[in-house]
Image (tube, rainbow, N blue to C red):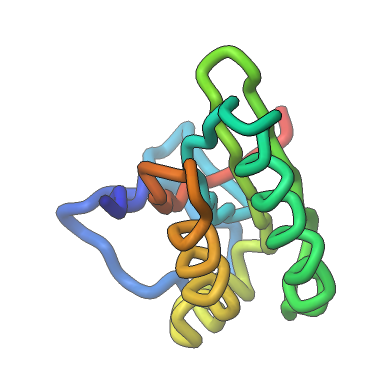
Amino acid sequence: RTSSSALSARSHRRLTFSKMPEITSNVSFNQVAREMRCKWSADNDKASLTACQEILDANLPALKALTGFVSVNRVVCGGCLDFKIIVTLDAENYGAWETAAFAPEAQILEALAAVDGVSSVETQTFTFMTM
């Protein structure tokens, strides 16, 4: 399942900006993030979590080379067994990454889905604004 953008599923469009975008008159943002996430299993001494990290490690150089790159964050929850890769770009460059199908996202999702013990492979787009 792929979740739609927090920007609004009803009015989804490529993001191109000449100034800081606003969702409403008092909600603006300057960064857009793409999250790739899945559930891992504690089976086999958490082998699926180890494999998820190896997939991230293999793709980290390509993610960090994206135009407009701000950060890559990894979130792991041992309670709900979440593994999340959050790639943040400046808002101005996000549209170009979207046009490029978020490469290398497809390879990452395919690799995660192929791991024994991994389920619920999903994506989501959302905005960031330091307050």
